[in-house]
Image 1 (cartoon, rainbow, N blue to C red):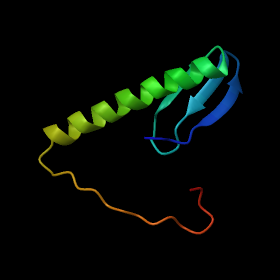
Image 2 (cartoon, rainbow, N blue to C red; image 1 turned 180 degrees about the vertical axis):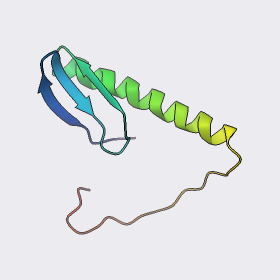
Image 3 (cartoon, rainbow, N blue to C red; image 1 turned 120 degrees about the vertical axis):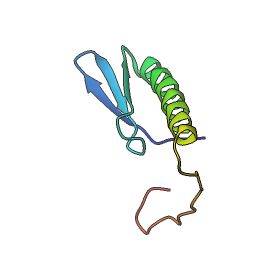
Image 4 (cartoon, rainbow, N blue to C red; image 1 turned 135 degrees about the vertical axis):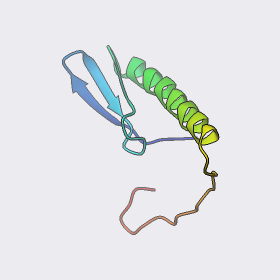
Length: 73
């Protein structure tokens, strides 16, 4: 599974966020460290989402959405 992330320089080193996962952010002293940290953050984010879905009264379904013109692939 791949996610596009935004990498930015910060006062602490490198900050990374995942536009497709609201609130999913991490950082590191270097870019490789920040990317490793965001991979962990993504896994943990998805685990929590799965746990919340299982605990809820609703059901989980998948919806396929075609790419829009001009949107990144």
